[in-house]
Picture (cartoon, rainbow, N blue to C red):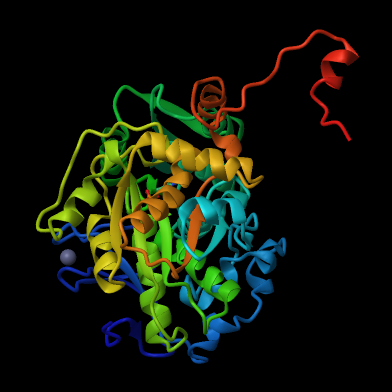
Length: 433
Ligand SMILES: *Cc1c(COP(=O)(O)O)cnc(C)c1O
Ligand SMILES: [Zn+2]
């Protein structure tokens, strides 16, 4: 990995830089794409004075907001490498999610050592909160009057909550009929204006990017470089939990727009450049087979950008034209990573195993575990590998898919049992002593 241009001189101010043409923008500018070449911008920070310690033993960030919430945040503890100039941050707080083992899930994947980072345990039930705390804080700093996103559901839920905390109006654009019940309920209840668009996610994103350009509403999608800054903390927190000196061989995550893949790549790049990380874990991005442009690109060495019409039960990753394509490619290249595609049946099987282990997740999240099993069986992941799987969203996000699965004929279906109100009906179900 090339460490030369990852940090600015100590004492300087963070800035936005175009990775394609090197044009720079002040950190306070509400821009996501380069005005000259259109590439997505990225944030560069000054090198922290305490070097690797900024990640390995971050100082508490108690004074960043009035309520004190940020002091408990798993994002703002890394503020030096997220948004060093932040004050009055909008924090729930988020992050500090569990990192657990399950023998049942490990066995199903076939790897020697599997741990699960449950990002569904964030305040609105998905990892999106880590990026949203940074983006909404930035929006407030830039004087935004309104903030908007296109969403398959979780970004909408998260934005709606953080905008409500900040007292900013939120507009969320979602594909009508394609958003899981829990997510739609959240966005509505948190008070966002929910716009049901007659189109898919990709057309919602196109529309909201135009609204941002033409109408000046602050754009909260993961094209926004501050979303990436917040989401990097998944990786740093995970490495703190494994121990910085013993990182996993692989980190697996589901991939849609590729913002999170890009964030993970940037987190590992920066950690390595600071000397915090002895070796860089390989990223495994997993897509649903019906929405797998990145996996198709990977098969051809990323020779060209691929777009597809997306269809999958995993609605959070039902994305045909990933906006953070270049960020994703860089993350896979730099970590010697891999991209896999798994079928909806594999996703639902993985979800059933994760759910029945008492952990639980939404369908898209289970793609990470299904991808590990698939690459283990193909020999890409070695039998003795250590693997960390990121579960991106909570079980309760998509109750309809879960209930439909358990009412069906799948091998792991656990249909409810209808009984009359009679004790004998229960007696025959109780294991005898
Ligand atoms: C947003 C989301 C993803 C995909 O993340 P990208 O950054 O779009 O690749 C995966 N799983 C869940 C639950 C999500 O909400
Ligand atoms: Zn540019």
